[in-house]
Image 1 (cartoon, rainbow, N blue to C red):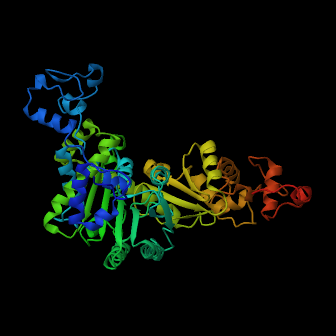
Image 2 (cartoon, rainbow, N blue to C red):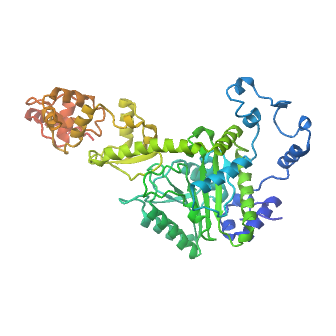
Length: 541
């Protein structure tokens, strides 16, 4: 009896048949399959096959194969649910019926055409027909089961989406190795090359995920960087290294700037070398702004050794992917798939995407304008960002969780702490008018406060002078009091205009005196004397 890859379990004959095809056409693909990947198959000779036969040949009134309830009108659905759909545009059958495990055939074909349309570098290259998954998370998990065994190494940047650890490490026992994603210029090409070469030398293969636009940083490589990444893979492949590249392209298409790589690496890799296997994970979830539809796609591209049998190769891989889908979620939302079919055929979505793209690009540009004058340089450093939904900042003193909680409790602003000093901001959720918080006068005052060096102070009057409103020192004091971002905008460095007064502070004047003294600020004499003894007992961060 045929056995699995590691001779641990007997193989189903259907799985063996698929393995034989894959191994003879593209040995590298077979070698990169996991134990589950070699063992999985699509159950085409069971219930599914019999139901398909009946659908073609049986009288609909007497087709008793599928586990749904029907009458002469179609699915026996609840009117209380159907009323929420426009059945002139989408029928109850399109809403409630099961979809095929692989996904609706028309949708798969349309999505492949969409991939080619937005990636001219794919052109007429041979690629698999996309297999539908239950969102990009599910697609990434399916790819993990297909290509990773416990103990295998997955190479990732140090800036990642946290779910990778959950379904690769926790659920599948994969070991993660990371490289520094960014340097001051952008993508850390040297760190990337180093870790790949080390892994190739140690194991003769590399498996990695590249996520562009990156979550959480919002960075996509430039065209020059993308070319260098492709050349690195080709160098390894020519040396005999087997390379698995999974492209997580959840935020694909949201590239802000001409210098940014505008096309997927899939096009330059999918037929580049027989030792490179490329898996593209993308979907309508974010590309079409329908997050709750949970429709993603898995597409595979590889050169293989036998080009004449490439369609046979892709059919075998699609059956294996279909087997994993069948064994996890069975199939995906029929309503969502049929709506997407209509949208893709309609083509009006192209202008819709451009409209939403322009909105997000404007928000990204506004943030860059605010950051360009250096007002926050003493407080945080923004990571490079040029795409997607997010930006990431590295705080210089305050820990990100402290700031996250302060923003949430004091200003009702939600952010995500991703590391000790890293805070992620989804600018995709912020309207342009709300990006800079506060009135123009308050913002002018806060800019001056941010610019006060450590250990120095300014008075309300001095700030009023600096913003060109010398008589507005009382209003300056009010604006200082409205600042709820003390961890970033250091209002303890602003003192009352009057002699020997420190001014009001949210934590009380004594706390303000203590905080200023700890930070080396110049204070009225009596303030320092009264607090001298406290300094030996209290430490403020």
